Image: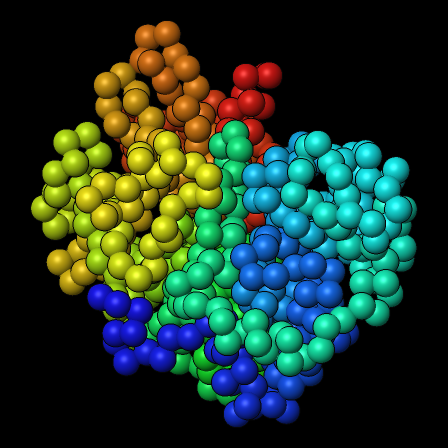
Length: 539
């Protein structure tokens, strides 16, 4: 199926934005607690960013790194790049200096823009100077020449000036005219990469995933018209980091509808509740249990007026989702299945599905997306209802990892993308997610899904979140161990949790040890299990 199928007017990101802005110029578009854009003011800001980027030598195909917390300027630069046909590279705010150095070089960045806003993770200026200490020896504005990043020419600092960085004033004072940007915009092709997301880094080095204009636009359109049904009056709260597809897709969904997207620099549960109430949010997209748990556990939650909220999206084990649905009785709790390599998400639950379907499945794939469940060893397709590796084909699949021919050879088979996810499909065509194939434990010859144990532990009244990993065992090859975050004010110990499992879980599935944590090692949105394994090895 081609990009033009399914009655969708696929365009570049720039034209997608301009088309909506022509219809909804004065409507709110991007909302932060203390600042906001209408569609008209956002378009002006995006053009201004594009005009300055072009004046500093950025053109079609050039890669621009964006390293900053969520803010209005973040999406201004993403869309400014799109207008020029440049490649926006959102960078994970959790990266340390070595990871930054790797991505800057691997992505062939020509320019990187950052901010003096101190994120919840780091001072980005300090991180970049640790990654590239030679920057301070250069005169700001003169092209850089770095052995570790040979294509990087400029670093831009928004906010207070910093040695070695182009200041915000200097950057914005240099501009080409708007006509030059429009001449570039009309030459951009829908197949051309618009954004290169780097995978979350749960393995050694993150992988660059270039996503095309048409792919992104069509996923935003499908998200709205097939599953979310926004109106121009709606506000969509999407607070996750803008370097993550869980922010990019809501942004595109809102553009399709002419709706407003609400975000925040740091996810603070008290402020989040105030925004949900103040802005009469219709759709909330916390997406991950750590965010939702913090909100529903906050003292402000019980008294907040969230009567306008009709939809909440989360991805979590079944009993955790059931608890979230109970917390938001006025809204429909839905889930999703997807991955960066397939444009972020390929399936959401439909709001008309019954509760049990929404709890146990991720919904049906979007039109234009095909899935197949295969035996990961024989590569043969398995019957409906059986578990196997989910393969994906269709408009949503990227063309391959950046500069990684070996990984691409492993990831693609006869035109299908091999996800590495363990899934099944119901007779009705809905996707059921059972975990990562590499997240399967081999306990004395028995295959055990970590997600199964995590889901059961989540039913304990004191458990906020459980994560299970495998520990090497001389007799059984490996055995499960559990990391547990308890609900605020609740108590439980290892003996209680072990007794809770007995009689309901097979003995070989019961964790051999329980570790209690207050903070999780996170990538952008996921618990990094390899770091839990490192902690296990150290202990």
